[in-house]
Length: 128
Image 1 (cartoon, helix red, strand yellow):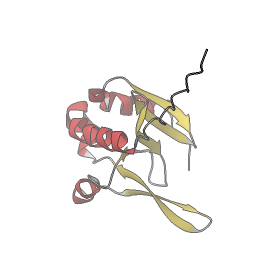
Image 2 (cartoon, helix red, strand yellow; image 1 turned 30 degrees about the horizontal axis):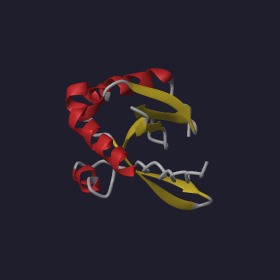
Image 3 (spheres, one colour; image 1 turned 60 degrees about the horizontal axis):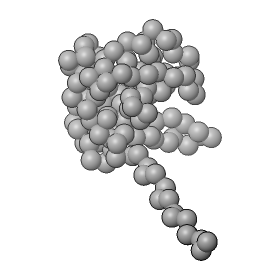
């Protein structure tokens, strides 16, 4: 994996701006892009150049596949492993307007993957 430059990360944040303010943060030799604290995309070069990988879920994976988007697959200890991210369609990389629907799919997947906050136990009242 090569190091992706911040210019491409900034551009990807602009593409995803329909979600609200997006922030790119360095992670694992690439970038994570989050909106409202949820990771909606990552930027990693898996050998085909800088690629924006959008968050996917079981509910919307087929939409990415129907569009011909590649699944995020890396090799660890000689074993291919996949993650719930798909490459953004080439035409969506042209403008925020063309990315809007894809950004929404990534947002929905990020919301679905969000872990609920742990339930807080009420403290017992003590007799005074």
